[in-house]
Image 1 (tube, rainbow, N blue to C red):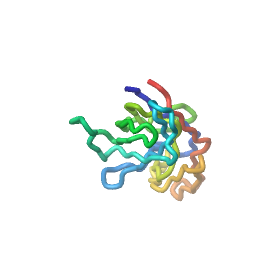
Image 2 (image 1 turned 90 degrees about the vertical axis):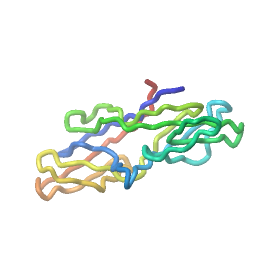
Image 3 (image 1 turned 60 degrees about the horizontal axis):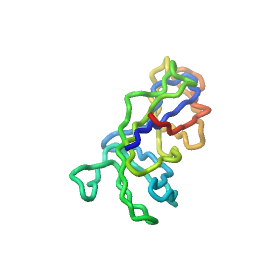
Image 4 (image 1 turned 60 degrees about the vertical axis):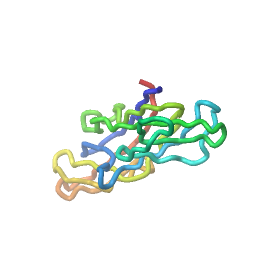
Length: 162
């Protein structure tokens, strides 16, 4: 069992509460490059995992967010992901926060790929932005209530051990 965190940091301008747009009705798909820890084969395609789906683990009564059988060595592995309560805020701008907890069994999470929409609020205006795309590592918009620019820039992700 390997406990990991998906960590994120970014510089925020006039926004707070930056987090994946993630609800049971519209789950955020966390996309990763993974490696089998048995044979060290890196999976040839990114995999997507969300916090709401659960899959049966073969030969067990348990469930996991993601169940994977390595094509090279045929070993079966699993991972459970849990969203933390942390968000990027005006106070944490430029600092690492723990976004996701990962309980990995037989899988090494090599890289996170930001696909999908994030959401945030204007710091002073309260304007909700629900179409924040961080795929290019930055996002810019205009807040009509604030009458000024809002942005999330210098976005970095890191997978770190507990």
